[in-house]
Image (cartoon, rainbow, N blue to C red; front, side, top):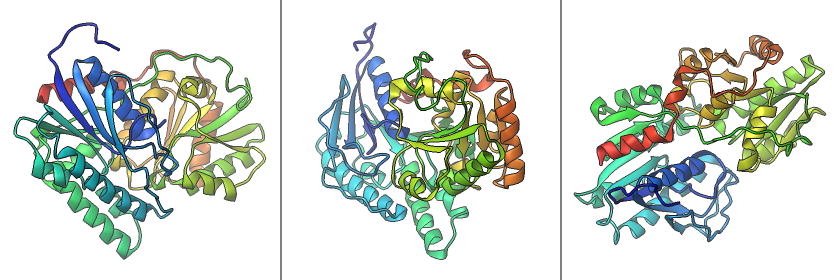
Length: 397
């Protein structure tokens, strides 16, 4: 789409392996970011992999987002099932990919926007950064935070190495945008970052209109009481605890059905190992069906591994708030997410995975009267905008 008004043209480079047409998580976020920059007069390029997430299988594509140049690679990549090995392969591949492609183009950009994680590629950018370009990093996850709860000496040592790379990457940026104040606080303290060179911008609402067209009626019929998890499934979602909760609730409530909408290795494992006649597994829905999924969900669950709440803020949160969906959140005490959901009229917060109190909170929320869709009743919803993110980037440039 052509911008409605002529704006000064700047050249922006987004650096992330994850991009269009990936359906969820960072890839979806980057797609909306690229569109927003394009509509604000930027000429946008993205150095990315062919679609890989959430299956962690490379799917070759020639698709280009309208008005955005995708510079792609990684067609021959193979990812193992082990999460740490998978991350290492991604880090090393993307480092060499950026180094190779960025060298000849480094002087044409006004702003370079790395999306973290991964982080290692910033070692190349910091060496090759042209003087005229500003580097504005956007932090989706603090990988070093997870070393505090991940068991085993070797794993802890690996995560500490990740933290060292992360620190170097963050310090190479002119400005950092964190997705939550908690992330900003932890990173600033752990990595000695100057507070004046960072800001916070919550993930943004990506749904413009909420409609129930009946496309998902076969999966979640009208009137069905459904507790739903939808989105990516990784370690930080505490998947085994999530399954335990669903099975407890299904035993306690004969009328309830539980649904998992996801893809990827952990999803496939759960699908094979957890069975119940009222527990159903589905692939991710198409983007145009997401509004209906949120409207048909009696309760949507946002699960977090204990000790990880300062590492990220779920990107699906703003859409849930905008839809007026009831939300069950399992997160750390006093976390930013707990504060947001706690002040939301359709939210319930549990601060541990202890099943008895958690099941009670979930039961109370399931029985609570729902509400029709409205623009959102949460004071923070105005902070979940793409315009705010682009404004922060433009302020640095």
